[in-house]
Length: 438
Image 1 (cartoon, rainbow, N blue to C red):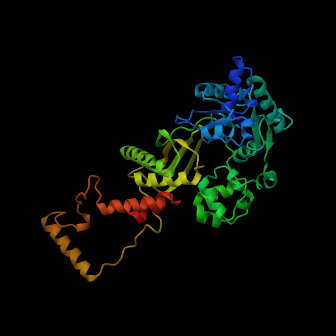
Image 2: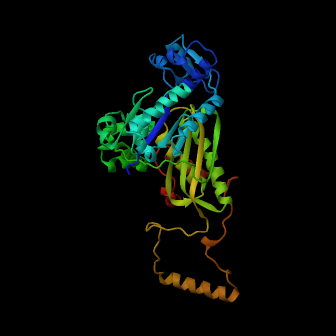
Image 3: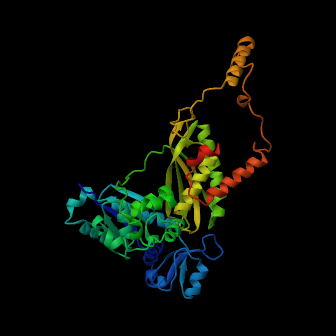
């Protein structure tokens, strides 16, 4: 049976939920009908626009821009602070309602979720009719509206729900990709962050269709495996499994909420450095190495995104975790302010578990020359006479600590800094060049 997946997204959730609550408490004006925003004041750490009304959008006000800019565009703008406790309650009630249709619900943020409609599709004449029942029921029951995207996988359903808003239903089935999705600008593609978009535009890839028809090898040359993923997304290739229940945690990770939103790569790097040290130390303490590294971002407006990669070799080295996280961040970061960052590891293996080496890691033994044969024979004779270990190779002797409190010489520190500088601007995936760094 062909899967039928819905993506359900609340229209301008924070503003809609605030408007509904105000009307319930006797307000005479609906914020959705006037120029209005949800955001913090100019002195707070959330002094940006979190949500806007359609009327505010007509003034050119954008989500994520400073509140001060919004007021310059529209001096009569109405502004209210966010109420996250109330938003969580609205979200909880919405998800409870959706589960009266099917339990196959995967909530991905406070205001959006996926629904696997497949098992109940035969209850309706078409998926669009089923979506209309859900959409209209939400509006009548709760007073706010949603968009619903419909397709055969989560990716295309998500793309469809972002089409014209509000209070709409859109389909994006595989045979509609060329007409509905390919003409869109490349920045509209899911998971295409600012850095990736800039790289693609330099390759004269300006639309989703351009990417879909581009040479995959060329794209991967510039964007590595993230480029392959974007190319697959542009061609409508994406997962269709809705995770109704969270998977059992089988990894080690850490995340931190920032005291102030980070807006630059330079602000993000020290955070990832500390997280990598924490996660690496916990892995070592547990006697584990990670085969998979995941990086997560929570934006200023509480949207969550994550990106992961499988390491070429399992590792618990904080340097590997740090460089991998930085690389993943650069691939999907939209350029918007960030309030939380995290590193999580999975596919854990015991430290003592043997590694599978590639042909490039194997150093074939060489036949020793006559000089080394004589040297080995002399060592064997001395060890036999005075006890095993009496004579050892200098390379096997325990090394003294290097200069500096962290065990690195100044020269080694400089090399580490050079490596960081080169990695933070590229797309290296942590473990890929680990052998060369040893």
